[in-house]
Length: 182
Image (cartoon, rainbow, N blue to C red; front, side):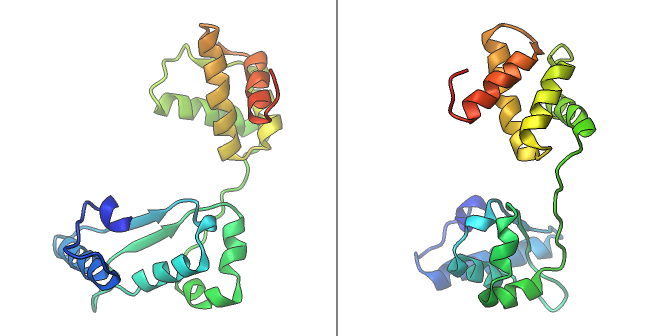
């Protein structure tokens, strides 16, 4: 999957050829002054064997520097997985850990507005204060949940042909996420 994401096609379908193909690519990138990053989302779902393969990829280096920077992104369960006794060697290679904490209720509105503008939404598309409060209550400030509620709330607003997302739109979104009828 990593080779495909980098647009690489190995000449043979075996582990050694895959690794050689990746290493050659990384060496070419390093020679060109390009930093390569491998970002693995939902890493908490990776089985231990795959995490061990990721650890082995962290060994790809020259005498001067690592050939690939690996970012493991995931839910809090990722910490528990990395804390398992069999993950000691991988844990030792992790140089930076960062945890995204839930947003405070007063930050949710600015976050929603930022996401809307980044996505290219016009200024008329906005969440009213009651909708923001409903999103904040349901999500507990967790960005992933904020995004999920807002996606459905925007859809509810679209169905109403309204650019103002109201508390009712947010309530419909929460009901949808919870598998209830709005």
